Amino acid sequence: MAEARVIRVKAGPRLWLSGLWLTFFALAAIFAPLIVPHDPLAQDLMLGKLPPAWVAGHEPGYLLGTDSLGRDVLSRLISAARPALFVAIGAGLAACILGSVLGLIAGFFGGWTDRVISRIVDIWMAFPPVLLSILLVAFLNPSLQSVIIAIAIIDWTRFCRVVRAETMQQRRMDYVESARAMGLSSIATLAREVLPNVLPAIIVLLSLEMGIAVIVEAILSYVNLSVSTDQATWGSMIAEGRGIIYQAWWVLVFPMIALFLTVLAFSQFGEGLKERFDPVLR
Amino acid sequence: MTEAYLDIRDLSVALQHSGDRLLRRVSLAVRPGEVHALVGESGAGKSMIARAVFGILPKAVTILEGQVTIEGADLNGMSEAARRLFIGKRAAFIPQDPLTALNPSKRIADQISDRLIHILGMPKAKAHERAAALLEEVKIADPERVMRLYPHELSGGMRQRVLIAAAFAGEPRLIVADEPTTALDVTVQRQILALIAGMQARHGTALLFITHNLGVVAKLCQTASVLYAGKVVEQTSVRRLFADPRHAYTRALMAATPRYDRPEESLKPASPELMGELAREVAETDALWAKERAHG
Image 1 (cartoon, rainbow over the protein chains, first blue to last red):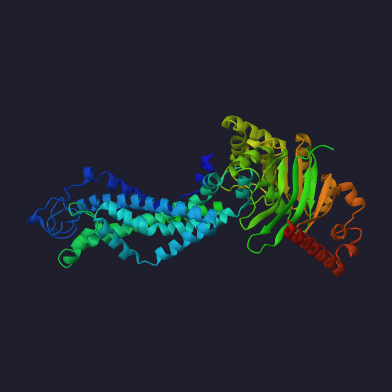
Image 2: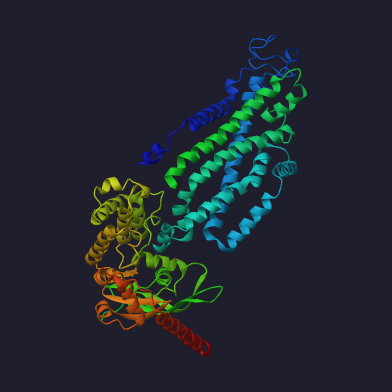
């Protein structure tokens, strides 16, 4: 009866609205090449700095206006969802797997294993994250893969700390003892008995982490350390829009709104999941 | 006299960092089909014995000496993996607290059938069927419905029934029950005890029953060991234990059991003389042990 659990995870407005936006975001990213009204890279200086469709002086067909090179803002916004989604999933999962595995090991085995892993986490967290990511990406050569690697290397500690604490709490429960008494090995006990009980916390964190990854990618592309310039990103759009904010505010504002809504949706989705999971498990 | 199924000989365990002994040369034997009570106050080391049998002692505790044998095979002489395999097929554990002894994210069906699949290598469908039969045996009404529930949807007594079903699932020859009724209220306790007694008799399982409740000992067990500060102070048949308790501590333990008919006697604290005598005895044991070790 898989439904038993799903029914209890009723979608409140928080979960529902954020889920809706995330679905919209993912669909836009996946089908970007098919749905963009214009080529996001096509320049036309004659059509530069066109305002959005509800402002005087607009041109038909350019719903959110154009930037200083005459590129369609809506098309760039949609095509920039791709790298954002890619980083959210890639970096989120990578940080999640790395941090959760280490957290499970530290929390379950305790002793010196735990001490070593916890000290590494402490040291890791003392580095300023944005600076570290800029350094890492510069070192790895700017690309989307480097961004993903950098975020995973920096943010695994979030998962590690929470998963370690949850695992320690589960470890003390008698069911772990009985599993061991019936002859299950440590690894089997950890994977089959403990992990399912820690999983809700991991899923909630993963959602939050995806939002953080989107922000970090925007920061990195804002300082031009992410993808090459032939791919639009929200960060690079904001950087371009900043220079012409008094002539064409829309170049800056729309990518900011997209970024804001997406990050908000990820964090609210995580919070919503947490609310739903909590009464079941505690 | 038949040969012991579980035989613990001269088992001493100690805290690793301080060297304090938690078990002081404990020896006890449980014969096939026999119910042996392990009685003592909290902290006497009862659960430590259970953990030593299953090789799940806390990390901070080490075995200093002694053997644990099941079916004549020395468990301490086995490798980790061999020991797990050996013990999983022969012995099961009923833990103390039914509230945390079931995995909160597993359905009742899986709590039992996972065991059957793991220990007996039973195919999934068959394990499911057997799980339903076991739930029926522990008198759970509507087992098919209960099997689909999660532990938090069951009462404490129901959960303890599930744990008992799970313990008997692999047809073990030995069950170690660590105060299985302590966390339950009195009326449920009686039902659970009757259930354990019935299951034990039907399956002919040897049972090591850990408790601090002497009333339970009288009802359920044939032989008993009384533990104080990790030392067996008295070991005899239950009939003789009650008719003629030899050790002062046993008598004190019996006197400490509240009695409805003699309220003024029952709530007396242990006398300082007794406490002093017990402390002396423990000190003597340790001194003797230290001397022997130094020579050996």
